[in-house]
Length: 319
Image (cartoon, rainbow, N blue to C red; front, side, top):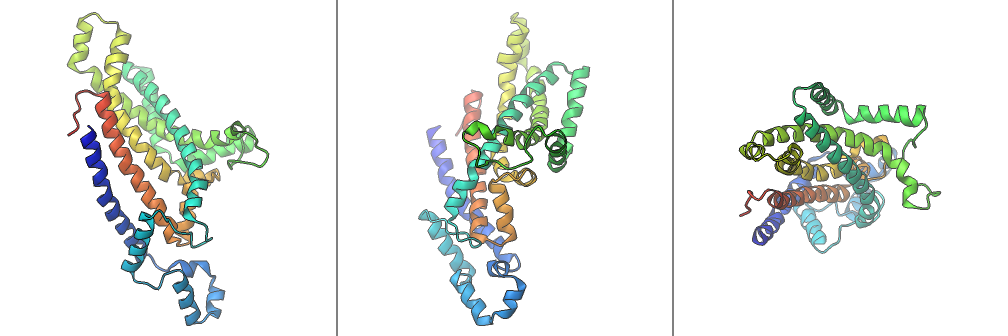
């Protein structure tokens, strides 16, 4: 297994290089540049062409595409992520400030959706064909079909504006003195995000559990007179867990880059909000680093999933 892990890590390097080049090239094809977004049209009209060129030169935008990509790549390999063009803030500081909020929201939503989705999916499989199964299937279909934006706005309207039980948005306030003070702030965004994920995990775990219960080893276990709860939990659920782990593993990196809507609705100061702002402002260095981080998270999750799958299911062999 160690040889497999080392080989996969070495494969990550050229993959990251290729993807970073494609992302950088895609940004190059977008209309305008950072200077056109940093200054308003009135100020640009009063500036001469020489002044605009000097401004672009100060940001290194006058160099060719290959030169700029090479400079950016060398700096990243040296641990220098550069500065945001919009505010001049080091990108590393932006990550340190924004990433914890996104990770916190993602992990809380992932935990609750995994627990609830696995439990409800297993119950639905064990009660196959019953009213409980039909009800959970309908709920799962609704959860997958309804957009996050709708869920978020409805939850905000009911629980924050109408009932006043929870804060409207934000994460931290100056009056907060401990971690637990901001727990009410995370309830609504994590609840909405986990509801969407719970529906998917529930449907996936139901299908996986039904497939596991139809295997021959389940029939053999029943013929030995083992208790039904032992057959379902220790034999069926363990096998059914393998594809669910794959789904959950790929959900985390997707969550990190996919919480944009929830962060905007609830004004959660995470990396998703920062990504939207950087795209709107053509802040290419920041866009590149956020995109590269998301790609790295997906590739790393793929490696971790393979290892966990082999540990859970002894039939899987890594080579």
